[in-house]
Length: 145
Image (cartoon, rainbow, N blue to C red):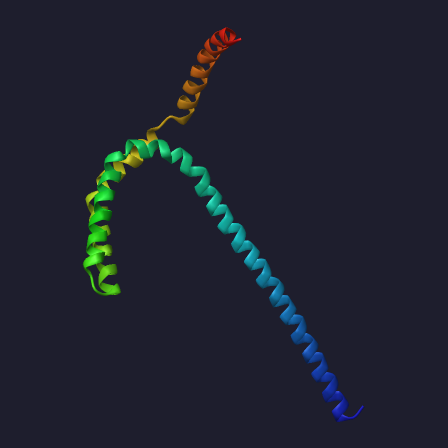
């Protein structure tokens, strides 16, 4: 073999190695993309599972929601009066900071109340109520026939 053939063989092997490496990189990028999608879906599913339980607590935190609504109204009024995008973002950030600062103790109390809820006891009470109501429903259901 002469120098040109050796060089051509070397170039071909380098090109094959580059193609193999590119295929490996593509495979690993696809694996990372799938993993990221799985993580994102897991997070969304976690949120979907937590939200129904939090709805009960939201009812108890009605005062906080009213304050948040007032703050949002103030923030909207501030955004309308600001002439540039950066000024409106700054104003909204300031309003939210004030809201969070003013309500930090209330949020702490709400979180403590959430942690104090006896979900097992609540579920048991609901089951007991169902056990009591079911015979009554069956009894009154007989009169419908």
